[in-house]
Structure formats: structure tokens, C-alpha cells
Amino acid sequence: MLTKVTRSSALTLAISYVALGVVALGLFALPLWYAWEVTIEDGRIQLIREDVQRFTEVFERRGDLGLAEFIEQRVSLQIAGERILLLTDPAFRPMAGNLPAWPREVTSGSGVYGTATLDLAGQATRVGLVRTVLPGGYNLLVGRDLSRLSPLTTRFWEGLGVSVTVLIGVGLFGGWLVRRAVLSGIDHVSRSVTAIVHGDLSHRLPFGADGGEFDTLSITINRMFDQIEQLVHGVRNVSNSIAHDLRTPLAELRSRLEEIVVTRPPPEETFDEVAAAVEDVDRVIGIFNALLRLAEIDAGARRSGFVEVNPAELAARAAEFYRPAAEIKGIALDFADQAGAAAISGDPLLLSQAVSNLIDNAVKFTPANGHIRVEAAVLSDHTVEISVGDDGPGVPDEEKQRVIERFYRGDASRGGTPGVGLGLTLVSAIARLHGGRLDLADNHPGLKARMILGGEAVSLS
Figure (cartoon, rainbow, N blue to C red):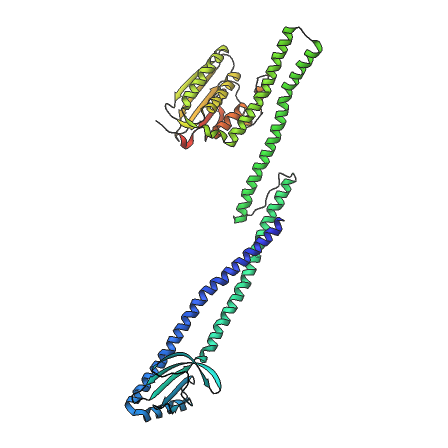
């Protein structure tokens, strides 16, 4: 169906270009023809007037008989056979010329008869005439045969017809070439899309190095295919991770409930098991809530809640909130404000959650007697940076990008540290929502997480 529609579109496009070319040629030829006709007619009349002027001068010098003799000489010499001459007396009786009688088409009075049809040698002929009344009532008729230029007119229209034919041929051939090129490119796209629909996500469009339009389109589509492949693999991984991470709390929940049913412990133990079961359910709900927040953030739905926010104040409050938990573990938690009154447009709840997630991770992985430093600063490009550095085990370079993926948990977090692997994913998504990014770097020792926010949205007061 797609190919049929494309073929029809290509043919329609070719016909449209041909029709446009014919119209353009006609718009060029018609004014040219009009100018030709007007110029030629004016030229003919001017030549006839010059002849009339010449004959009038002869009449003034030599009289009527002298003019008659002059005209007969001209007729006998056949100067330009298209010339028509007739001299009559006041009673319209012919005195000299090559017309047997005064034509009925020419009425009384001097004037120009641009186009008239006369019977010359038994053949109807289009002529241009000028009548002049000479002193004494004599009548002079001078004209030229217009059919002499008919071959030129015929050649003009023949040339125009040939041009139209060539234009149509070239246009159809060009349309066929365009159609072939367009269909070839569309066929490549169609085959690639079909292959991907059938499950071959690695299939890509071929493209050359000349950088043509279809090559640019192929490169763009290939980037889209790369993104689609990445998203599909991401969905698969997320689905597997969700199944894996939900299986543990659900299995524990089932085990607790089953044990209660089988053993029927005393009320206090039963309530303890129910409380543990509630915690398992809370873990499951927390996973789904985190996923819903990620979906909202990725869709940009939370932008409607943007207001002017001071990130330094948010970071200070988050640091103050986690300071007691850090002190319980013997960890020193400091906050350094170098951003001052820098403000960005953002969602205060999301930004608070992001900073809290970074500090919470640092508290989890920093050993006793360790140190955590939270900083807020304005960078040279007027973006705001909130960084959380610790002296914990850190993250290997090969895992720095992976720990941002959903449900990914590094080796350091697999030893019983609570969490589902969505904390840094949320922070990264929130940073992107605010026109920034999340960078992870070595703190020597430990990890330094830098959340850069704002871009051009930062305003300094």
C-alpha cells in the first residue's frame, strides 16, 4: 500500500512539474508573440506610410500622369512582389497599379486599414492597406501582402510545439528519475522498518559518504533506530529488574504470611510478623512510586510546578536533615555555600528529593569516622552545581555510567545495603528536567556526585 501511494505521488509530482514547465513556457511565449505581432504590424504600416509619402512627393512634382507612370514602372519592376499599388481618378477608375478595380473593403476617406482580405489572382489574401486622397480627388491605395510572413509565424508555432514536446519528454524522464530515486530511498526505509518490526533491532539503513538528502535522512533514522533499540533493551532490563526486585519482598511477604497460617504463633509474634509484612509491602509500593515519578519526570509533566528556587537553601536544609543520621554513624557532614542567592526555575520538591538521595547514598556507604561534604556553587557558565562528596568505597570507572541506570546496583551495594537501585536514576532524571546533568567523579577516596542545574535559567540577584 505504501509503495502504491508513493508511486502515485511520484508520478503526480512529475506531471505537476511538467505542467508547470509548459505553463511557464506559455507565459514566456505569449508575450513574445504579442510583441512580435505588434512590432511587425507597426513596421508594415510604417513601410506603407513611407511608400505613400514617396508617391505623394512624385504626384506633387509630376502630377497625376507622372505618378501613374511611376507606379507602372514600379509594378513592372515587381519590387517586392508583396506590394499592392492602385491609383484612380476621382471617379475611382483605375489609372495605374496591379489591382483591376477599387476594392469594396476600402471605404471613402484617407486612413489605415491594418488588416483586410482582398482577392488577388483568384486567391483570398490578407493585406495591410493605407488609402490617401491626393489633390484633385485622386485616390492612392498602397498595401503589402501579409501572407509573406506566414511561414515565419508557422515556424514560430512549430518551434513552440517542439519546445513543449521536448519539455514534456525531459520532464517525464526527469520525473521518472526522481521517482526512481525517491522509491529507492523509501524502499530502504520500508525494508529497515519491516526488519525492526519483525524483531531485528540491529538493522540499519545504508548511506553513502556524499552527504545527500537521503544520506542525511538515513543517518537521522539510524539514530532514531539506535534510540529505539536502546529503549527497548532498557524496557527489557527494567522489566527483568522489576521482576527480580519485587520477587524478594513478595517472597518474604508470602513466607511470613504462610508461617503465620501454619504455626499460628501468639498474638505478639503475629503482630511482629504483620509489621514486617507491612514493611515488605512498603518496599513494593516504594518501587512503584519511584517508577511513577520517573515516568512523570521523563514526560516533563512536572514542569508545570516550576517556581524560582534557591538550590543552596534546599541543599542546606537537606544537609541539616541528614546530619543526625550521619552523627549516629560517627560521620562528619559539612555544608559549604558558595552559591549565595543564585536562583533557578525548578520544582522545589524534586530538587529536595534529588539532593536528599545524594546525601542518603553518601551516608549509607561512608564508613564510621568518615566525612561528607555538601557544596553549592555557581559555575562560570552561570549554572548552579550541588555536589556531595564522601570518602567511602567509591564507584569504579567502568560502573560510573551504569549506576545511573534503573535498578542497577554496584558491587558495593550488594552486601545488604537497602535500596532498589533507583536513587541515582531519579537524581539524573531530575537534573535533566532542570536543564542539567549528573556527573560522578572520584573524590580520592570516595565518590563525588555533582548535580549541575539551571543552564540559561539561572538568575543572580
